[in-house]
Length: 222
Image (cartoon, rainbow, N blue to C red):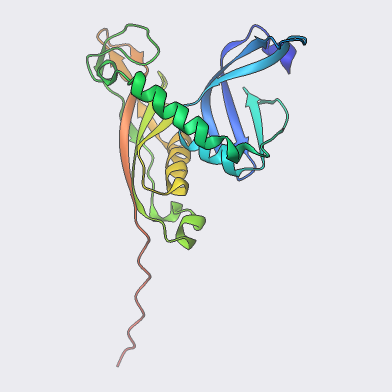
């Protein structure tokens, strides 16, 4: 797998966790890692937009990365739960020091990716719903409910390539499920620039997870 990835850049990747969760739309490329006192080794750099990744990284037993459908093997995640709080604190500190310039993602601003193009119209959702039938069984058992707001990265083809939770429901299960379903199911008419060409953009969506009410008992006829 390393030979064909060598010199590769900007490829689509997927991380599959043993708990059944997937993170898609990852930008990946190969890197050469120089280890002090040792030989250089190959690695893969991945940019993740979903904070739910840390939850899966902490709780799953293994992770299987793949690049454009080619598996790179299985990685043990034993002991990762101990380092996740530090990773989360580092990410939060970085966000405070370098807050995202949301103005460039709004209509009239430049889209993510730094192309400099001006967005004349943001992405418009065409298909995709989240219903009570999608309620995660684990969240039902734990009686988790709440609102989750996500920012979706939408590419020039109208596909969701990334998902960031910007307002948590308070339940990592509901947050990660929202991102997983949105990336798998939502389709958009892509954003367009000032020249009418499709460009990458972002769309914010809020999902209200409420535990479904039980069906009423039937009333006997008299």
